[in-house]
Each structure stands twice: as structure tokens, then as C-alpha cells.
Amino acid sequence: MESGQRYRLRAPSSGREIVIEAQPDVIYRDEQSGEVLEVVGEVLPLAPSQSRLPWAVENLRFCDRCGAMAQRDLNECPTCDRRMAPLA
Image (tube, rainbow, N blue to C red; front, top):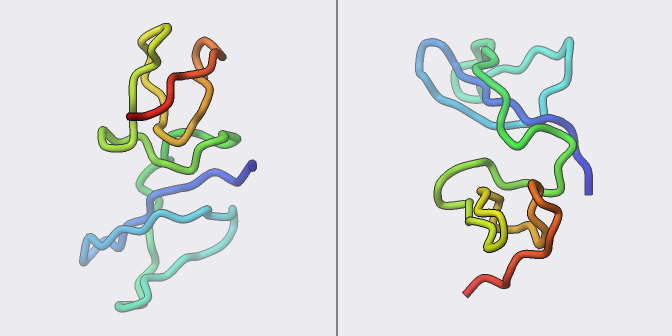
């Protein structure tokens, strides 16, 4: 399942943020205030990726073979391409 790149957008005055698959040349507005949202950054992992989970401590685990960090929803380590042990 491949998807587009997700971005974090922020409303400048209120600081409200959303994470969406933003398209180039499209203006996104805050639903409550109507102000234009600014792109703050790309969400890791970068597209294309098998995982939809953002890289946050609660969504990561360590590969039992190489020790690299990987998303919890992946079956194979993106670093060493080996199958990871099931989650406890």
C-alpha cells in the first residue's frame, strides 16, 4: 500500500496543526478560523513507505536482528530487510 507524502500544516494565529497528504498548488484552510495553513514539515517516514504510522516513540520498536528502529506495524525491518519477531 503506497500513499503520497504526508505533511504537518499549522494555522499561524491559533497554532492548531493537522497531518494530511497535501498536494502541490492547493491552498489548505483551517476549518474553524478559515485562515491559510502553513506547511511546517514532512512527516516521517517519507513516501513511499509500507507504514502509515508517524515516527514517534510510542509507534516504534527495535529490530531484534540489527537493532535499528522500525515502525510497529511493519513485519520486516526497513534497514536489514529481515523479518522481525512478533510483538508481545
